[in-house]
Image (cartoon, rainbow, N blue to C red):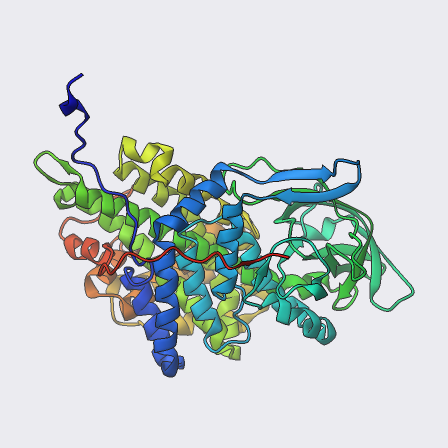
Length: 562
């Protein structure tokens, strides 16, 4: 066979050695904008830490870790060689390296640092582009803090461990570890999202606040964590409990792992079914107020679902643009072909809208005012509903931009596609989010006021946005059949919020294209159907990886073992 038949040409080079943070204009501009408004003195420090994380995420080493962690999924070991119950999950070393780097980079430490939520959200967005599955325990550990703060004694004991920048793998008493991870268990076979139907029983012991739990959890993700917040039925009603994996004396708590879920995506992460049989637990909050106690954890993990989806969308867009820059067809690079430019611009709009909304929500957490809390009450479930739902069709379209190259595993796009539906399901599917918005509208009028005040900051800047806001107000005023219309109402809320943010902060060509398509309805049913008269070239150019910079050194793993 002639050697010339093996000459490779017209293929995109591997996308490695770039700064995932610094190359993303929408992300870097958003972080700088919110810091300038709240903590300008931190801009240099945050830029340095996020640049280091961005270089690590774009390295060949991190990408290899991601591939290895998904090609070698976790394995359940219920017993040791002698027949003793151990209930452990073995992970590939790459999983520990990803998780260790996340923890040492502060991705579980937001609640006590200045601008902590903004810098942590940006970091989670960046590092998740290396691999998404390990983000589950990172998210739950971060989100457990506000629930534990309902009990000052528990918070004093556990919060320093949860927010530590040290990752120590292995099950040991928490007091002997410099840092711990937390999970959560709410759903059961018969209840699903209806957690008040849970049947796990909690029997109080003589010691104050101590209980024994008996029951099951149908979805318990990341079961190698050091502790879990779970819901169970106490004598006073549904209550929140802290369940440690290892008791202070070093013995294993009863935490029987029945099996690991065989999931569509998220293959690197273990999701399990777990049985409690007189499992020791400590009450968190008051009896009968379990949902109220754990709700802040749920809200924080919902925001992480938005961040995770926005991260997947950005990674898919980056891959599509990179391929189109280097692949030629019909005599010209794909990126210069008018129809491909339309597709890429449409994908870029979706990605920037998700990124901008994500950062606005994180900044609202940092502000912590009553106004911002009221805004988040509606904005988080609306964003969770819409951004997570937009993820799958966008990733699928980005995969198609690579053609057959995108359909093979080596491209990384199939892994992104399998991961893409996850965040719309976790922490409440679409209907749960839509109904939660309705609940807030009916019970918390201040939330609607804060939401309308936010979108009102862009009033008069774009006639299509103004018209969309008027239509939304008409929808909200009509209560007939509101539950059946909830998805449409929440979709419009998310779109006008994204539109208002882009009109205020994005370049004119981005805001114009978003308002024309998403709000003005000059748009088809698929990506790549933007009005041809828009400045699509400028939108695509903004989506390219900015700068370049040196090839980064491989990131350190951040693991401590004993």
